[in-house]
Every structure is written in C-alpha cells, then in structure tokens.
Image (cartoon, rainbow, N blue to C red; front, side, top):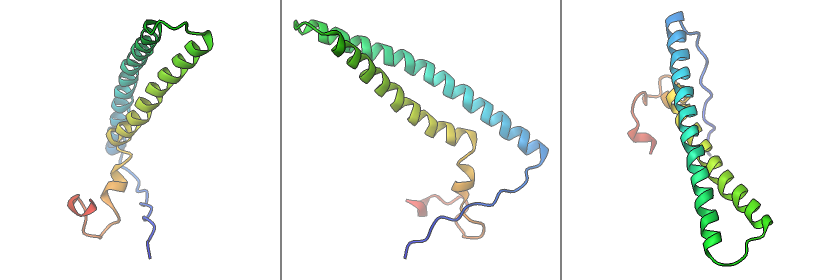
Length: 116
C-alpha cells in the first residue's frame, strides 16, 4: 500500500542561518525577475514573428485573429517560462531542501541514487 510522504518538521533556525536563508531567497528572487524580463522580450519576439508569418501568408488577417495570436502566443510563452522559472526559484531559494533531505534517520541523507 503506498504511503504518503512525511511532512518535514520545521526546526528553529539560528540567527546566522536565518540571515543566510533570507539572502539566498533575495538572490533567487533577483535571478527570477531577471529571467522573466528576458522571457518577456522572448515573448514579444515570438509574437512579432507569428504576426509576420501571418502577414506574409498573403491572406487578409482579421483583427480577431491578430488579438488571438498576440494573446495566445504571448501568454503561452510567458506562462511556460514563469512556471519553469518558479521550479528553479524554488530550488535556488532553499524551499526544496527540507523535502530533499527526507525524514530523519531513513539513511538517505545526501544519497540521490535511490530516489530515481
């Protein structure tokens, strides 16, 4: 019978560890914001390329199709990159550390080979 993953217990952090955690989180947020700025540029580029492709087809493009293309392509690129960026943010900020360690005393501390 499958068992649920145990919820790790929160342990109080000393002041220096808490400061390090906040600095690590701040650095992760800065990287995430920088990534999203670049991905916004990539989304605009993808929208422009899609609009150029539609215009070069030689068929008249109604305004509804332009709006749908802009929304569909732009939001798809932004949503995909935002979600993937949050995965990296979670790892870089230390939120995944407690889940990675596993329950205390199970013998898997630091051993990733058994988790595949």
